[in-house]
Image (cartoon, helix red, strand yellow):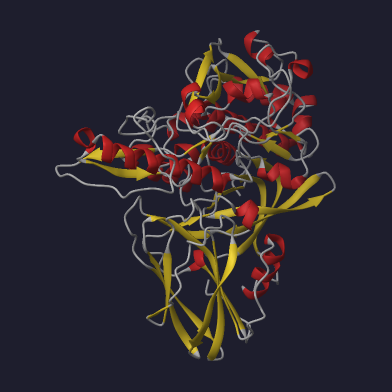
Length: 593
């Protein structure tokens, strides 16, 4: 989508650059900024230029502002970059203001030609410089607002989005979130004959199990009370390459996409971030998503919706009841609960890996990063799950950018130390991969008619709607003690204590919202306490939740029922599907749509 312009004002969204070069599109803070941005993620090596063309209806002198930030100002961060206009370099260096917040920076008066003009973004460091947008106006007094919500209105006006989103169609089930849970939910429902839209805000499926994040699949699918659940998970399972494997192909992005695209009943929409809902009473009528690169908006109407975002984004937008953080022992009666309720959540990981080469290499000094010493450093060539930031120090939704940046400061600072102080061991190692997309563990949990507890798990309570079999330990992370000693309040390394459990079932009632009438959920955002979440959150288990939601949506749609009524009126039919030893294709399905 070409940037739209008014006669004397032009907005160029960074993520819409025609050629992003070595820069990457980051949408992780869309729920804060209402926009994606471009970032120079070069792991210490300068990335290729990003460039685009923009048309001006009227040539002449324009005043120019750039929305950017200094992401690691200690006191000046490493995110320096410059801009060229029509092959002429702007004198100002951006990204080194010493101010961590996003803001508009005046770049001076520039001459723009009538018609086509070229813009080029030139990275100067390879260390995650970033910008959100470039704004041109014939008036120097016309500095854009820095209020994110007000700026959204201006974006829509200047991008020509005021006429509303493009209509995609009416569906039986819209699944928001294309991780393992969302992907299995879409496939399960589609194979039962439902018309499904699967919306994912990244270019790949798999979420934490994609090549962008690289977390392995955990949980067992071979000890199910209902063996039908887990079949689709097996199809998507690409084996166990471990966490942070430098070989991106081991995570099976192409395979996941091929399986979904082979389903005639699935309409797949990648790179689309849902950020708005339309309600009809207590039901969701439609969702609005924006393409993270082109900014085109789309509207999806449906009978049922499933929140598989992990963050509970769809449920939150719809007004679903949710919890975030830890409950108290007094509230839940759980022995593993906190003494006092608080905002503590498990953290987010940005994994990384190095590879040994046949030649020696160096790495830049990183005075802006976390500083390590002989007393404390992480002596390893790659990351595993322990590289984790959160723990109540940051909000995992609204401070996702700060969490990722803190992880990067830890990764780059530690690697700089190893390359310099342990040169004999690491002289031939180069950073092969660092994830710039955070792998989240915990944020919102949407409340259903049943809230799974520690006692449900450890007592193995078999409710009449017990469906998904879970096997993972109660695995609640906390800051590593030594890491806390040296980085108190800035922890980035985790520890855990596994509480073993026998296989148990998750009630169907934990998979739909208690107050939004047509909302399902699958994944780490289902209805549990914080303690129980420690066991349900792993991806094979979440994938089976998605399969169950797909079958439940079929039963609801076939009977004109709500998700709750599947439990109160049609439970035998739902349980009959997941209990059936038959292949899913042998069960009567709705006609293909």
